[in-house]
Image (tube, rainbow, N blue to C red; front, side, top):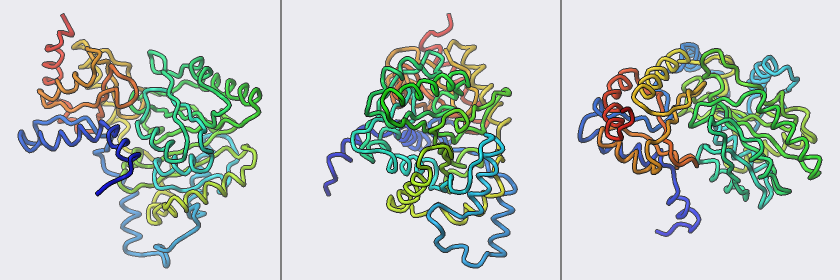
Length: 396
């Protein structure tokens, strides 16, 4: 059976995360699951909050008539109103339900956004390291992903972004807290970016959207606050999901929200709703829309993830690894002790450590650890990390 040349090429560049996850299946069959330390996939091991389970049980016992039927392609009005109430309290804006579209997760949301705003050849700027699927999502809709480097501390390099802006720039895509670094972009940095965008929009006589991918925005540590992009950027769209904060990755429920001050906001809403339909999502899952309406602002596991972060961060730094301490999400992004990060993570497999090379996130010379695994797995893995560090003579 033949497939398109384009998809064949994409498969050759597909995610290192999945490749290493499959390697884990092979190792578990040989050594047993308890002796394999799999840090590849950002798949929460925690359970959803008790309120979710109570709501699910209530709907099962007392179903709402028609609850499984189609609804508006934008989603249930009552769910969008619940999202709006939550966002307005955070941002001080005056969003309405027509500034929100419920989506099939954040991945679906990004595809809907790019389908709506991109013309063929339009450019989307992203800072590395970044989630690898962004390139495929942009390409899906005729766009081109333009990658710039971030600073050594993984904050945005505003000067690099400025150099990358051209008349074809349609959007700047950010992800904070960031996957794979866990870094949160500072408010000062984002304010500087907002000034740059306003200046370039005036120079180029165009609109440059700020698209913020925020599925980790509730997973934040040490009292750090995530700046509100909808308040900072006039032409901003927020995309998110409840995969991480409510531990519902398999339910594929998220939304798009956009600043009501965007010119032609009604047309943008119509475009997003149309794209949601014609991309085949049609609407976000009906049952999940009903359940998450009352769970806005809830989050599971923040202190649990913080403890896991500290266990790994403290151990890795004590044995010689260089790591920027993450402020959110559930990832560490240490520097590889050798430039060839792919060779390094292959060495780690000898100790049953499954990691993801930074090359998979557009930043060679690093590797990612997803610590959304059990505390027991982390504790059992520490001697293996020590042996790996000793192999590379990290601490003399």
